[in-house]
Image (cartoon, rainbow, N blue to C red; front, side, top):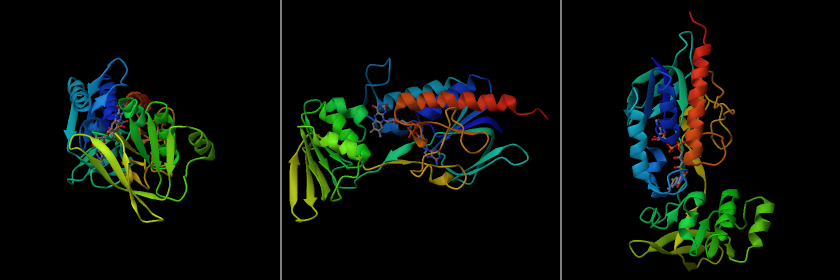
Length: 309
Ligand code: FAD
């Protein structure tokens, strides 16, 4: 059995694996896709001490760093079930391929995925104008025109944030009214370079083949379609944690995030969690890595306290 089994191979999982392995304990990482969301990222400009890098480059560096240590890296493995420890003190992780792994402690770092609009052009222009993270990609649109899709708290926060960087923001909400907190809505309405469109369904992202140049939405009241000329589209219709497989076993928030304390401890003894899959605010690489380190150190702390039999 492992001492620490990390489930998920993104920035959080890679950090957890390195911190655990450096304690000289048996460490494994099982992940569906090593690298995680970083693989889908173009420019990364906010990873402190690295002025600029690209997602696939960072993902390769993560894997290389983990492989410097004696870590059992199990790629293309999807976990489907967690069974808390019974008398043998071992937690079991069942995999989609039928195999199962046993470990004294587990670090869950299965990350999250942005909910997509599912309209033509969205996939084609992903990272070519279609973006999901305003903290990450906002500065790339300095002085340009963008739309934010979604009028919940994250959409309105994104629009306020972007309005300070870009030339103009069009906020598009499907419902008849915004759903964000009133204080955020008031702030948004006070900004001169923001236009709010409600009862609008985005139907297409258009581009010139290389980059986004417009967006089309349908007015849900009148039924007619409108074209907005712009350079960027920020989709803010929800971040979904990859925790469906943990429901009923590990305590989750109403949004499906794994509830952790400030040591990364979950509701299940010996099970820790880190990164975008958890309740920790702000989903960023540098934050996920810090949490991964915390979870691994907590797992080690847990191991040295287990009574010797
Ligand atoms: P993830 O990166 O999501 O990794 C999750 C891991 O778990 C993956 O290996 C996945 O395959 C695996 N997994 C999931 N489910 C299972 C399962 N059931 N069994 C086994 N394995 C599983 N952040 C920044 O700081 N700067 C940026 O510039 C930036 N740009 C971004 C651009 C885009 C397009 C996106 C999508 C995100 C961006 N982010 C950026 C956010 C950043 O990528 C995430 O905050 C970070 O990757 C979270 O790390 P994580 O390890 O928690 O999860």
